[in-house]
Length: 160
Ligand SMILES: [Zn+2]
Image (tube, rainbow, N blue to C red):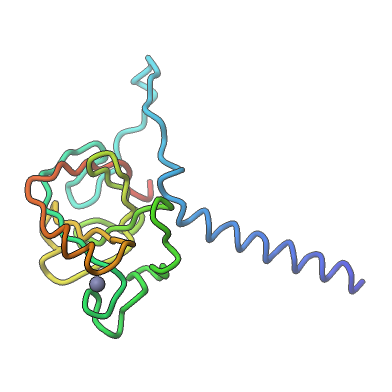
């Protein structure tokens, strides 16, 4: 009886672990380009505050790391939706902050897909403004500076 209980607990923990990893492995879950010849069956793009999947927006980018200078002491190291930034290895998946998109929206900037996992000051309210997490650290973020006129494509919006 005790053995069965231990097995059930292990299975439960395994399931919980899978769920969490699935939630953050954003780039690998991006759907491939649809090449079907039956557009009538394609669901309409999801929308959020007038922004639709597939929209291309002229954006403005800034860059940040997980330090207290970039986030304030209270929020250093953790995104607004609870991701520990130190666990994000370069090339693992990419995180960006914005206030005009929901959490888990995916955006493509120059071929890199970012998952919206963070929020920021009022500057990030502006449509197209993204603060991009830079795992290489504070100096790297400063060096990247500010990029105007970036092409931001809305890949997917959550829900639906
Ligand atoms: Zn920093």
